[in-house]
Image 1 (cartoon, rainbow, N blue to C red):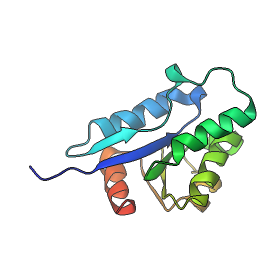
Image 2: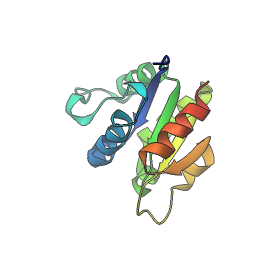
Image 3: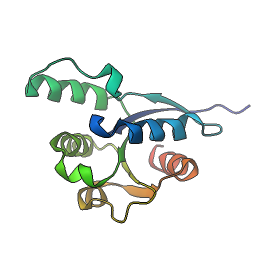
Length: 136
């Protein structure tokens, strides 16, 4: 079997919409011949009470080592300062950003379209193919 690259990914999400995050994780976990490490924090491991400065630094520590930031888009992105921070910080580090256009969504947030290197459909094959294109 050929060597599988272990992709280091950060999946941005709003904990209020954690089922979307879980679905994205499931797509990646169930993809054939795809190995990845999750650097994001799911809701059940959420940060304890932190100041804004502490949370900012914690997110920076999660994003720095990754090879790609995956944005689970939905219109809630327009109202999340933290998701915008994650996208801006990733871009400042030169990290590729992959936007996921959720199935059934009429529109993808303009902030995601503007910053993402690629926006793909909400399915495992599209997501994995895009990650492979974006990460050398």
